[in-house]
Amino acid sequence: MKRTGMLLPLIVGLLAALVYWWILGNQQKKLNAAKNMKQVIVPLRDIREREVIRRADIGKLPVPAAYVQKDAFTYMTEADFKAIENTVARVQIPKGNQISKYAVTSLSPESGLSSKIPVGFRGYVISVPLATASMIKPDDKVDVLFTFEATMKNGAHDKVSLTLLQNVTVLGVGSDLGQGLDIKAAAAMKNKEEEAAAYSDNSTISLALPPQDAQYLALAQSLGDVSVILRSRGDTNKYRMEISSFDTLFNKN
Image (cartoon, rainbow, N blue to C red; front, top):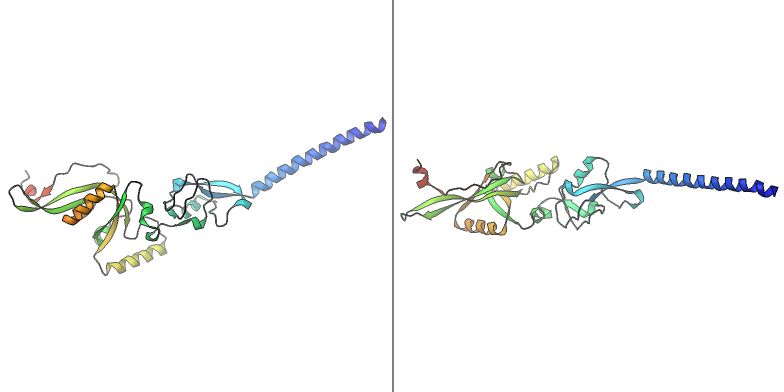
């Protein structure tokens, strides 16, 4: 009996020690796991193939270092988001998946204009004078003017001009799709466009148009001259505009 009475406290003590070391070991494992966690950049929603990735589309997620995919974009500071912002998805990237470097490409003519076209719209490319193109930037708003020869009520022919389309979004100017270029890339693009300018006085701008407006613009180009005018960025109104002619100009009160 005496020996049994001595063993019981010893067994209880051993069990308590084992529980203590088990708890301590678990805490140490958690601490080590926390030290080995990395923040990776993931989509906050499903990203479609060839879709431009915006800052609002991406966030960060902690994962164990052992599970970080090869070439995945990792997060340390807010500047790390810049590496993905305004890139184009090569493939569909599901929400919450790690974004790897092979899954995105830079926004450029090589990645295709279609990546910038809003759903339900069409990308319409028109030629404009270089002087006009140099003053327009991607995501600016323009109005499209149409000038043509019309038959007046008295049977005479006169040039008239009207505002065909208003508040149209510019998708790109030449090869600039608004991708955000570093100094080296910007200089290379400028040199390329200057070389092209040596052979032409025109450049191109790409417009986002509803399909019906695209048809109107195609018709206008076949019948007369089309030009664009730049709008204030804060002016999104559509105005009632009368048709202009020399007759209305000289007969104004």
